[in-house]
Image 1 (tube, rainbow, N blue to C red):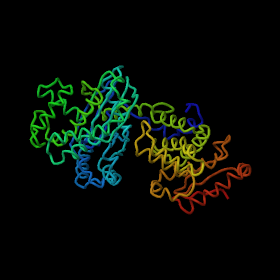
Image 2 (cartoon, one colour):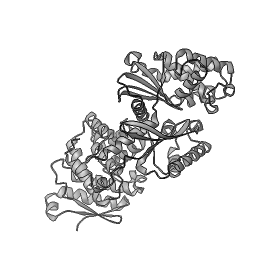
Image 3 (tube, rainbow, N blue to C red):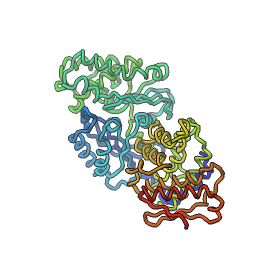
Image 4 (cartoon, rainbow, N blue to C red):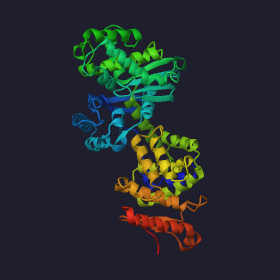
Length: 516
């Protein structure tokens, strides 16, 4: 979107400009992984990353998913206890200095929303559930920043319930994918009783190979020159090989065969007593080894070098870039690039999106001055994407738009934020009952009202006067102002505005009042 567009001029109101971020202090990232929760506190100075503190606890949240996909209360309590300790360490941190992300286990858990309510209350900060591809993008951001090179590389991250693979060059991820196989899930499935046998390893490797098979072409060995492994499983196996004098810490097929042979000789996870192997890693090591060996053999990885960066550093780097963007007159980050890409892909009429954005954000700036910056930006993105569903069908396009917005993989967006934008898009027209839960949030209700009024105002899809409508807030009542001359010149728009007021009167938490 051009920076001199009407949307930009009207979209960043005084609330946006009044809270410039402070970039000199430390930033914190919380990674709610399937096996471990991690808190990283770091600082970027002159382009260099410096760790200030790092806390890690083996929560085994992924192991607490039952057969129905529900987190058990025991697993939930372990997570809450850990987040309580993290919250103590974050005393004094401002909201803008902290970002918490959750990965595969909470992508899967059917009761994740109930957990998130309790977890966010305990932590004192919002927790975003991110998609697999967004997790992969952030992993690569961490690795490429802490270990920069122009060489084309493959980065692999084996988590508790997912494995991320990223092909990249320099700071740019060229391909990023996430696969639903991890050290915890594979270990529970094939080594749940602790017994270590050849048949179990063979079955685990076949299962891992079946999940990873579709990655063989896009991540084929001729596409990269070096392979790096990030995070827990790779780090644990690397330390194991180095401590036992098998390699210098590099992971090789020969080293993996040595590890598997040692597992078979032990016969049970309880008897894995290698130096450098922590007790909390024993139960999930076999699944991790099966995935690593499958990657080595299927993708031609002769040497996997442990990486210095990981998801948590990527989150800090991404947070820093967002804060840096907010210091500019017209802030943009990777999410804005994703929105433009989606507009192009789905053939969105950008002139109409721009008209709706300019009206909606001008109205919202007048009635919700306390809104957080992210709320204002989410309204803008909803305006940008409110018509993507037209590519499916003009009839009920708001429903198609909401589905697409809620389900596409867009760099920079968490699943949580996509859901909020999707709900706004769904609410752009029609009745309000479909938004019952979301409308309980006052900020969302005012966002939805402003979007709906903007869609009505711009329904003729022609040139508009963005100042023709003014909105004033009086408690939970929205007072809409316009001149008699404008009303006389726009009878069809006036008719739609009266219909809109009736809808809010019948179904909404706000009241929309028009001049008599």
